[in-house]
Amino acid sequence: MPICFITYGCKVNQAEAQKWELKLRSYGYEITDKMENADIWIINTCAVTHKAENQSRKIINKAKEFGVKAIITGCYVTLKNLKTKEEKLIFLNNYEKDKVIDEFKPLFKSYKLNLSRQRAIVKIQDGCDHFCSYCIVPYLRGRPKSIPKEQIIKEIENYYQIGIKEVILSGINLGTYGKDCEELNFKVLLKEILKNTHIPKIRLSSLEINHIDDEFLEILSDSRICKHLHIPLQHGSNRILKLMNRKYNIKIFEEKIKKIVKLYPKISIGTDIIVGFPSETNEDFQEMINVIKELNFSYLHVFPYSNRPHTEASSIKEKVSEDIKKYRMDILIQIGKNLKEKYMKQFIGHKLQVIIESKKLGFYTGTSDNYIKCIIEENNLEAKDLIEIKVIKIRDHLAYGKVLKN
Ligand code: SF4
Image (cartoon, rainbow, N blue to C red; front, side, top):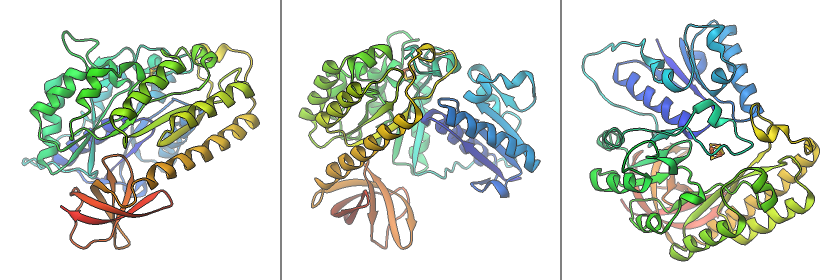
């Protein structure tokens, strides 16, 4: 009875699917990444954009077409409240989501943990109460809810025991961790993880600028915390940031980024950008380009604005046309590529710490501490190895390197 996980959207969806996969593997179930070979599909849907919604709807229809048993959860089914129409095997977010694998009983008695990924994603919280004016997530995932710290530490140690060398701490709004608990916050959690686990590398999936302070920057100095931060800027114009209901202005954002880079000059800082927010003018767009260039990001994730139900921004009348959105997107995507190449080139001749993830066409591939995809020519490596390489060249946004030690 092979099972296939089909996961759309954010790292939190991926973390959930990975946790269910680990459990089902330990129960003795076969997991496949080929939909056509599976008897059961477990679909974790997304609704963050129009495109994600369409993808989710199509895969649900495809499951019906194929006559395959589909267990469906996530933001799309929650938004559409499909539960009321097709009760069985549909699980809405919040209280129901973890029941997704309840109907699977162990096939074997002896448990063996195994995972297809080499870098494990650990969900530490869900939900958000920032209510950015374009974002539907708080309506679908509710207020911040923290996973108990003991449970997080146990999960990380379990991954370490099966050979995983890196965990990616993920959440909808990571920095709100502990908001629903007493005497606990994200920084306390990080310190506890450093003290009570042996995992060699800890990566943070995404962090809002207002959650970055001096105490956090000191914790970041620990060599086990990856020198990679993803900090969403979303826009470079103060007018648009205000309309977006973001909690900072450009001056605050720039000052903090410059402080981080001063302390950690080689750190990778990536960001999210929304293009074509309602009423965005050429001047706003130009301001955005100026800020992006000034801050010298390591990479950009560029998204077109997507009109979402329930959100404040959806009622702003002056929408940007699809043509203009596309034109501006193309410009930013090219700027993002240039920035990425510039960031990577500074590592030629330098060392990087890399976790090996797979072997393709005689080469090993992996991800470095500072989030560079690497290619390594070597014979004696294994998936999950943590090694040190010297970068020889950069080509097509990949760093080619030789092993220094492992
Ligand atoms: S911080 Fe803003 S963009 Fe991020 S999940 Fe919360 S509301 Fe959405």
